[in-house]
Image (cartoon, rainbow, N blue to C red; front, side, top):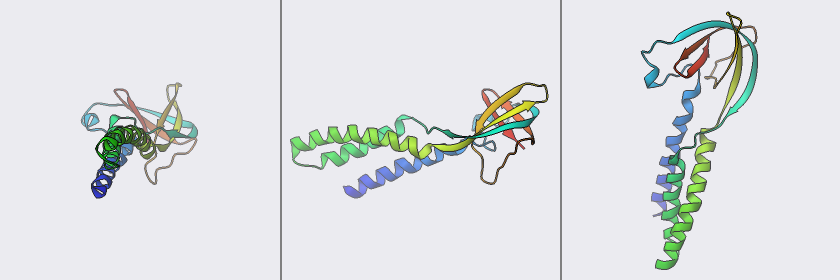
Length: 152
């Protein structure tokens, strides 16, 4: 029983790690592929490191509640096991939600760009490995729908 609880927790948290990877300027969602996007050019005026909060879906709390409920049900006899299953599910749900948010939280950068038309905008994105921006650098701002990204 303990091994199955650990396997469930491991599967739940490993699925969450992939959720944080789509915030870079190099990543596109499936729905963004093959769509027309507007490109503007500008110069970086300001860079500021920021934290991008993690996801808050029902996956983490649901997995935590399942694992907590299963673990709690193994404590004591029939009546005690039921009570502990409920307590375990509540505590597990809270812990699972916190784990999901923490695992998917990431560092990013707020990039302020003065566009060639004189307008200034700011975009927050996660930097891909080996990706660097510098104040004064010329960049492309790619906009499609409600998404925008800064690219070299």
